Length: 240
Image (cartoon, rainbow, N blue to C red; front, side, top):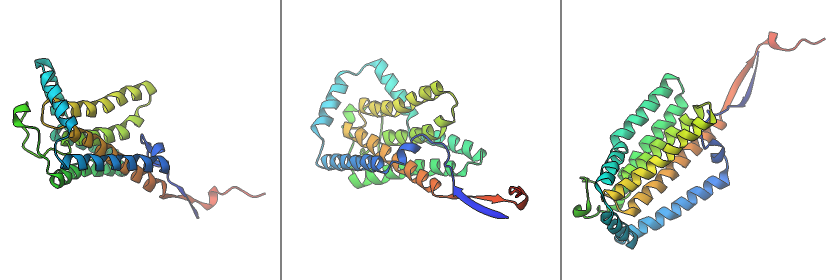
């Protein structure tokens, strides 16, 4: 009996081809790291001019219909909603016995929560004045947890599920809300007056950076694992 080894083919994931391109990944992560460093430096120095101008503009353009819409979007992007989405997707892959992808979902989603908790306490930034807020939020401000969480959880769910769809137009149709929703959540947080614009920008950038790191690590690890192929004696070709 002979045993040979070949490289394992990783599960099909969106972004997997991109994450194999080391220069592109390093450039993206490096750019994101620089942007986050600059943003964090700015917010630790106080409220930026951009933050004040955007908040003033939003307050001047509020309306009842927009407020109702923003409230619905922000509720859909809250911690409980993201936990439910992540757990349901995780459970689906566990039922299919796809443990590597289930682990990817769990690590990526939990990591987002840890990042929010740690960075909020390291930066210690306060939210906009209570008079400008339309909903109650007691926690710290930077980065936006709703924005970072929805970017990561919706992103990883889209990355693992969309490639499972057979038709191209269905994959495109599923990609659009996966991209638009985290953007809408971030904008709703600014509109409701519970986050500065720089909080939301940080949420998007950190979330995207964490997603790329997790998918890149997963893709590289899976590609490096060999698969054993066993050949029985009677399977060998006959010699004449």
